[in-house]
Amino acid sequence: MNKVTIPIFYAIDDGYAKFVAVSIKSLIMNANNNYNYDINVIYENLSEENVQKLKSLETDNVKIILTKMNQNLSMITDKLGNRLREYTFTLTIFFRLFIPVMFPKYDKCIYIDADTVISDDISRLYNEDLGDNYLGCIVDKSTIDNEILASYFEEVVGIPRDKYINSGVLLMNSKKLRELKIDEKFLDLYTKYGFDVIAPDQDYINSMCYGHIKYLSDIYDAMPNPNNKEVENPVIIHYNLFLKPWQYEDVQYYDYFWKYAVLTPFYNEILEIKNSYTDEDRKKDSEWMDLMVSRAKSLVGTQNTLKNVFESGKETRL
Image 1: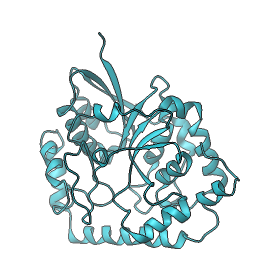
Image 2: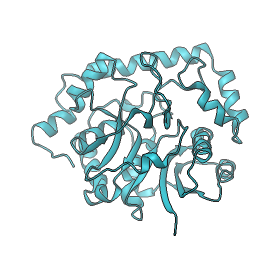
Image 3: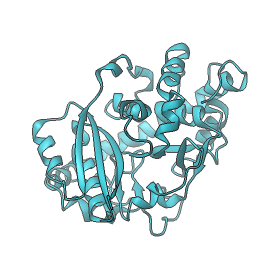
């Protein structure tokens, strides 16, 4: 009997090649041999050296497919106002919205951010039953305890704070999203309204798909948050926002990352990043986080919001 193939997507630029290698290595180390895995890495500006290093991670049942960004997406440019960190908010954040139409051979797939570690068998996530839902997602526990951000989710994005999902891990009903033309819906909203949002892809996904999301266990998107206890036996750890183990030592799930980083061809580079990260860099992280919260606060009460266009009937969700 032929093995089922599980399609998994990442989106990176050259700077994140070393971190996606850690995620891929951890996935491979915990993969179920009863499945094959197509790991699709969608990229822009990836060096040949990094291409070869990523390809070297392949195994008998894990295929790594490197795909350059579809040039038809070049019309999408992230507004300067949304670039809290220029190297963080690049065009790669929008790739996940175009996976269903760019890869029509897949009816179901997983999208996962590069700043992750897969510490258990990822087929557990893939085998979650979506029914007629568009997505399987996890509530964003990294920010839910910040009252200003929680108010932003409710008043600007238009999603209850306990239903606002993190888009760093998505189980996608690609067939359904393709039929609904999620790519066209996003582009129409993006170009027509020019919403000022703090998490461009995530806010659109939340607002467009609300009501058709299956909420999954925290084990699939365990995010560091010093106000929360660590999730026990996580399947996927997601080092969201600024809590990166290659920059800080006092981060939840720190050891998980380095367990796999040492097994990649990028280990010395990652270690150098950690060793050279300065107090000034950490201060900037704090300042950027404060800026994000400040911008969220400033947007509450404005009129041109995702919440208003959907709740007023000007637009319909997917």
